[in-house]
Length: 167
Image 1 (spheres, one colour):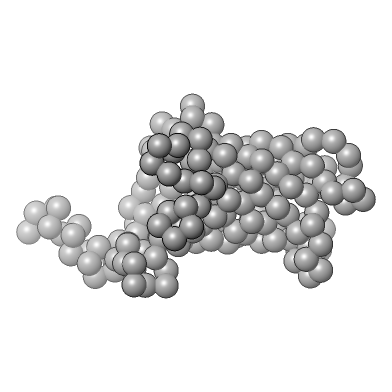
Image 2: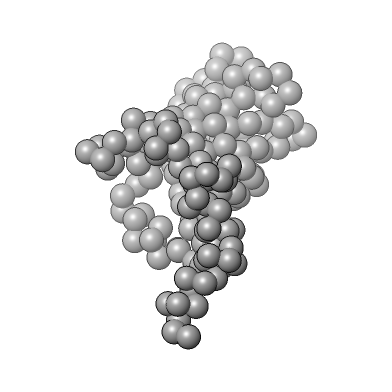
């Protein structure tokens, strides 16, 4: 059996997934009383990808185009490269969004981040795929801690594409 046929069988049997490394960087501002005033750096460096491409690519599966992510997050004025873990949802067809959701713990307190790339349409991909609007909230209380805007820098595209690994 050829290598391509073997790969097709592995994908169909759910034995193949992939992962990629992504960096989103920009800034955030704390809500009043939640941290130092002004703009601060905000960056997340995550690895994401489905473990099972057959389930991931099946629109009838609840895992359709949703995959785990993990890495680190820097929230200026709060933490530097702290581990984070969550999911990345490619909601192209349902909501026209890409949604990053992850949890992070800082000094014994748990936080929840949701960042979205919005208005994804074929004619605006260079903008919609590069800008992510996020909120960080206290997990226990739901209280808003900060709002962020991060960017996928286009000069990182070669590194991003080269990070593709099949597993």
